[in-house]
Image (cartoon, rainbow, N blue to C red):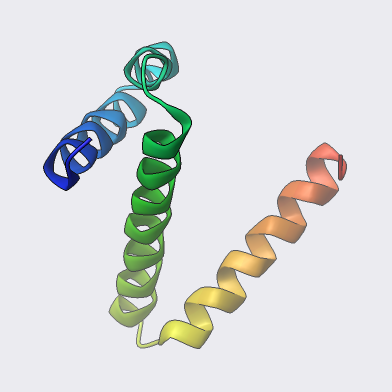
Amino acid sequence: MPEFEWDRTTMAIVACALAGDSDGAVELLRPLPQRDVCHIAVRLAAMAADALIVAAQDTGGDREEALAHWQQCILQHESEHGAE
């Protein structure tokens, strides 16, 4: 799949997530080979990381603060849902 298609599919998955349509996101990924799904997962992670950094910068923080906040979110999620 060309890079443009990865980006297009990634954006469609984000739109599904914003709409609360996880089934739609799954249907977008289902026909794709594992390699393409991995590329899309990396793109989604990069987009999330950029958003976290921007949010930290908006409150006067930096990349390190974004990372610390994300680590705290992971720990909180694990304590609420149990580490599996």
